Length: 71
Image (cartoon, rainbow, N blue to C red; front, top):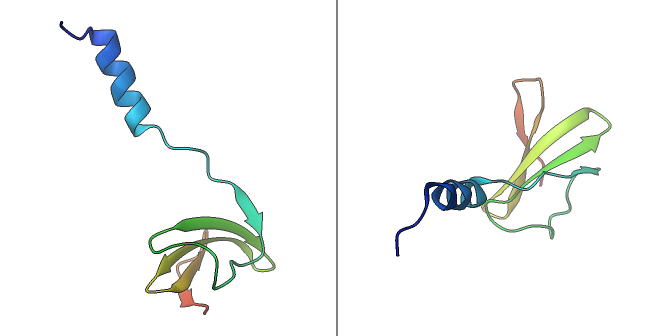
């Protein structure tokens, strides 16, 4: 049975669709998250994007160019 064009488009979009990222408050705890996970946080220095790499959270202030290791 042939797959319709609509079914192919729906399947492609459902596979590519990303869930909304929630904005949490404060930096992530060292015990939170898994390798490769990302989170956006509202902190006292502004909105920051964090990525967990090698068991450490690395953060960058959105709108700035600096990156720092925080744990």
